[in-house]
Image (cartoon, rainbow, N blue to C red; front, side, top):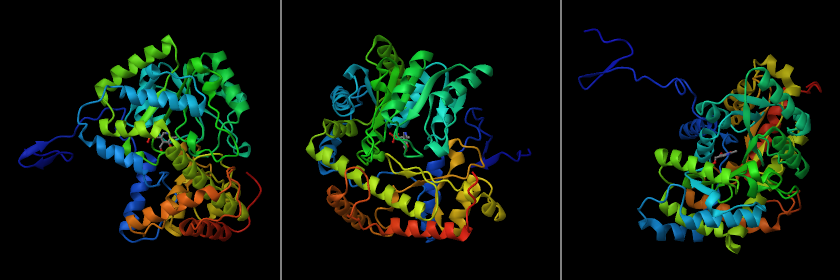
Length: 464
Ligand code: PLP
């Protein structure tokens, strides 16, 4: 018998092609995870790599969380699908106290990471999705996997990628003209990739617009605790509590991405409770529950005593300091880069060097990211991964992997990061560059290498 080319013989049996669901066949791996793996491979091959490509909060886990996790190690039972009651209550109280949100334990739900919770919500809610451009890599793929059409809401790079009422109206009109039915607006404040954050007025205006249109807001606030201090974090839920869902988790504020613990605060209404029931049935068929020991330890995090508050505040100050420092270097090199208000990202614009870059065969942001990695050892993510047009020559830079030298042993990394946390109280509370300069050699190396790259392009044109 002839074995078809696509088939292989494995231990005497014939393995045919596995028929993939068309929703996932050929779908790429998440851009951020792909870049992190590429960097790991380069480093394993001892290739110098300046890692601005992956956003992970790196600080050593606070001791009370380690101790509680150790105590909870024997908790091998499944937790309730939507989370331990004590954790749901702790998160609801935490969000009410620190974010000023109207919450209740019954409408606060827990899952294995806010990414999974976001996907369950997209599956549970009807209608198409309005999504600002640029926005986090996973929203559009998640919406499409949930069978939704995605309609972009344009933002202006010269206006810090702010989302405006006019841009929302334009997007809504375009959706209706092509038969779309957007009933969900996904927002992210602070934003990955830009670090931008809603001003209170903007949050209110967007909320009022959404109420007028009957659109539900899915507000991803996983970076809320990492505001840099010069602008208060304001959720659209403050103005539109009846139809705004807020998501967050432990990954960014508590530097515990691998714990996979996320939550959503749903409206405290009968409709919110219906949505809780829908997510419960979805989650029960998919993940059953987040890991019980992790949930038990998370109660300590969200009880948010002085030690937790100090840890989060100090981490936020270091993220603010590092982002401001790299941005200053870029601006000094002549690069336009919006001032971030939160998280650990920068979103510089290399459009003014379009001609010079084109002469090197670089015409898209993906080309630019490849060029920087191949020729300058700098890992970044291209704007196209965040939904921008291919020729938008912008990059997302993540600063959080550059706080300790990559070649330091894990124990040394921990010592270095703990020392930074101890020094963080000396940093200005508003994220401004003060007299305190932390020792961040890897960040300084990144700044110097980016400045060298910019200098090598020659004079920019002012055209955008
Ligand atoms: N939302 C945004 C904007 C993110 O950047 C990330 C992680 O990078 C997530 C959600 C996912 O977070 P979690 O670890 O809670 O799944």
